[in-house]
Length: 84
Picture 1 (spheres, one colour):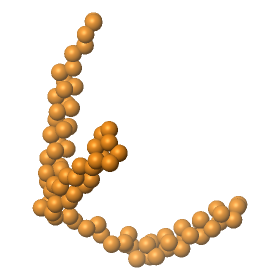
Picture 2 (cartoon, rainbow, N blue to C red; picture 1 turned 45 degrees about the vertical axis):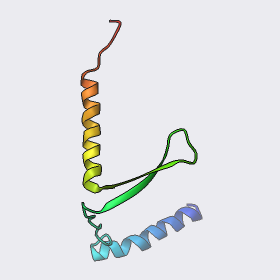
Picture 3 (cartoon, one colour; picture 1 turned 120 degrees about the vertical axis):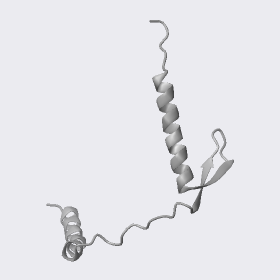
Picture 4 (cartoon, helix red, strand yellow; picture 1 turned 90 degrees about the horizontal axis):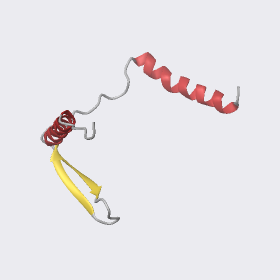
């Protein structure tokens, strides 16, 4: 066995033992408030410099995601094949 593999196994054993003994996997994930606004910056297609910043709540992002999925499903359901 190479020294690197032995070192990695030792590191996993050292890190894994306290978790197995305590029964916890660290701190619980933080719950984000649905009313909290978060912003993201997206590069505009075709531009290297121009960025578009959008700020929305988590609920607004989920609603947009659901609406986009519904639109895709609707378009795919109406798919028409030509030439047959």
